[in-house]
View (spheres, one colour):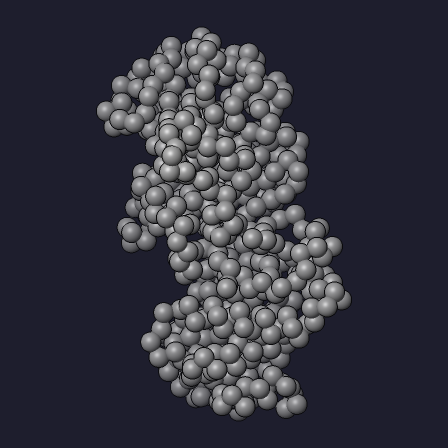
Length: 528
């Protein structure tokens, strides 16, 4: 499938303008947008199929009217509430009237009597008041209507058309009157502001309606940022033939753990197995092996020399002598930054040649960057998975500066180092050295837990071992990891009690969802 672009408002206007010039008229785009919104609404599990459309005077209102017409045709009970007046000659208004849809205008309903009656009897609210090009603050008459709906209780299932009305789709700023959506149906692309707070907290799940624009539009070719979705990620999962043996799915060698951080090695090792790799071997000190061996029956072990609870410098030659048939290397979880382990990492990088595809995380990143020209000594491209604090240590940039420009910072250093950067945190960013960026459309406190990153590292290594290209392995693992976090949160009932082990145990279900599309359970889906 075609990647889902992440664009600014001006980029989207340029795409639509070029599409119109190439023969896909604005009217045709609106028809496809409205039909797509209607299709998305029909996925929502409701009993009476009743919907109230909040309609503005612009294109989003037009999309909403088209959607109502399709829903009425499908047997839904539809009503249209015109927040801003539309011309009596508006053909879309005539279309919904001809479909038997009740219409009321805000000017006729100053006390919100009709609004409250319609809200009380509707299962779905379609927010088509304002579009992506609005300027804050909102006009008082529009803000008054939005604020009234926002405070109505119980609020029906809200579906926003392209964006929740009142959010700035570039900056992510939002009016206090924005009606929080449970689903936002975007047109052909996701706007950058929808992955920035506070707007990101108001969009609910995301869906994208393809507008059928030519894929070779120049304006589309210039887009370098995309949003990952399950349908695309599913295409990147490695094939698992029936006549396979363990060698088919590769071997991960992991260098991890110390006496103070034993669990990190175990989480990474099991995650690599859960990603589908055939064999996981962990190069660890005896203290770590002895603690984990009884818990991880499937893992094999390579014992490394130990110095004061950490990996000793002479362990480098042991690891280098055992790389035969290794198809992916994992370095970093729980290593510690002790002087002995720092010397080990330096010795290992300075004497390594022809390393297999590699992922580096946690203390491995901090220690590695102390080695001169470390980025030239890793196989290219390797996958680096820093959180913002580790990225700060690697780049000397303040964490606040990194967080203020996550995509830009990740892109710059991925290009400078020649490696893939997975900048962890809310809406994880995966940057390729060629400037391409994928965003993972998930922000959940369930993922903000010690050990969560070790699970992600193991997933990446497991996919690399099976021959998945580093960039797609990083995106796929980040998607599976994020979805597993959401599943764990759902199973436990809230995010505060989710542990890294819960995320790990949810990985099989996340992979199953990639095989069996369940739209309303996905963070982002494409409307059929």
